[in-house]
Every structure is written in structure tokens, then in C-alpha cells.
Amino acid sequence: MSHQTVIVLDFGGQYNQLIARRVREEGVYCEVIPYHTEIARIKALNPQGIILSGGPNSVYEHNAPQCDKGVFDLNVPVLGICYGMQLITKLLLGDVSKAEKREFGKAAVQVSDSPLFEGIPRDTICWMSHGDQVKTPPPEFFPIASTATCPVAAFANYYRNIYGVQFHPEVTHTVNGKKMLHNFLYHICGCTGDWKMSSYIDEQVAAIRSTVGDKRVILALSGGVDSSVAAVLTHRAVGDRLTCIFVDHGLLRKDEGDQVEHVMTKQFNVDVRRVNAGPRFLSKLAGVTDPERKRKIIGEEFIRVFEEEAKKIGAVDF
Image (cartoon, rainbow, N blue to C red):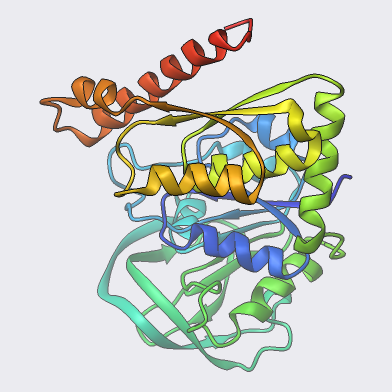
């Protein structure tokens, strides 16, 4: 079943998943995707709205993350949050500079009449966390909120349906943040609330069943949340036609491998083939100190072990 979708472009902020959660709580399906996702992929998702998340960088730093400027030409409403607002400013030829005084914590914010702030008192409390701020909005953008030290705490281009807020509406410390996101989703993006979390499992099971048909499935299980949830959903869809290869790389917590195997086999009745590959992984990691290199080694070795074990039970096309 197809739902209206709002996407969050992830710039590395600590609240990115929280933004998505707040959107879903409003009855709107939401996906978080990397900031560098190609425009063709974004268009294929047919978003009803786009949110640019916060992030730890400064937009004027060398190699600061930025999305394709084409996101503003999709005729889709955009909301930039914190770094997202600053990036809108940079890409659309406004001015961002280091703030005279860093704002962190609750701040008194004065908002103007705007679709984004409909039903919100002129004086409200929002959560700030920034060292940079918008000095001059881009052409045809207008300030719609301010604080004592941040004259452009929010702005809007009504013609292009592009908004930015320097604060974080997704956190509970922003008193009317939920209402702001509701306004963006329903009054600006035109969402109708056609999705609910309680239907997600049934929809995903049906989608897996439709994709797999009468074939068998081999699934790589790491013991993490993502692969474990995928295994349970797939088992609901295809039953005993699923075989999970649990690659125990020896990097889990003490006894966690045993717990994973027990839960999957005894609680969910999944066919699990465990591979105790700890010594193999640890030998590959010996002497490696760089975290990123470690991650790549673990990922590469996980795939190799999975391929080897999959072939042993008759899988092809590896």
C-alpha cells in the first residue's frame, strides 16, 4: 500500500531519528535518508515534504555536508531545522555567520503570523543548540521568528514553500514544537494522515510475501536490531522457508550470541544456522586501531562468511 511520505535528509544531527518519530506520530509515513542522496532517488520517493535535519558542522567549513540544491526545485515543501536552516541560507545565497553568543537550552522566542506557527502564542519557548546563525536570509525569504540574540530564528519563502527554524521543534523542551510540525505536515505539505505504525507489520509481511512468492529465503543475521527484526518479519511472511545464518563475529556482549540464538529459535521458531567466527574476525582486526577501518573489515568479513555458509546449504548466485 502506498502512503504519503515525508523524508528527512540526515546531516548527522543527534535528533534525526527523533524528527522521523515525531512525523510518524502525526500519522505520516517518514523515511530518513543520507543528505547526499541523488535527486533522482528523492524524486522516486515522491515526497509530500522534505525536512533537512540538524547536524554538528558549520556550513562554511571545508567539505561541510550539503544536499543537492535541486531539492528546492521539486515543488515540494521544505523545512530546515538548525543546520538545515543554515544550509538553505547558504545554498540560496543568504549569509550565515558565527553567532555573537552561542545559544544552548531553552530560549524565549517571538513568532509572527505564519502557516508554520498557526495556533501558537506569539511568545513561546523553544530549544536552541547552535553556534552559527543566519545573518541575512536568502532573497525573497522573510524572518518569522526571533530571540533576544537571534534576529532570524525562523524564516519563510511563502512562494516556494520553504521554511527554516533555528530551534528544534522535535524535542519536548520546545513547548509548541509538536504543533509546529503538525502545521508543516498538514497545513503546508497537505498531508492527510494516511499511515499508522500499528499497520506497519502487516504491510511489511504482505510486501515480503509478495516479493518472495514460493521461493526460499536465506537471511544474514548479526544479532543486531535491524537483522533480527527483518528475520522475524520474514519468518511471519514465509514460515519455514526461511533459513537464517547467524554470523557470530565474537564482538557481541558476553553471552549475547547464545541469547540471540535462543530467542530466535525458541521464541520465534526460526531456523538458525550459527557460525562461530569470532577467531576469524579477531585475527583480521589484530593491530587495527582506526575505527572506520575496523568497521569496513568487519563488514567485508561478515559478507564473506555469510556467502561461504550460504553456499554450503545450496544457495547460488553469490
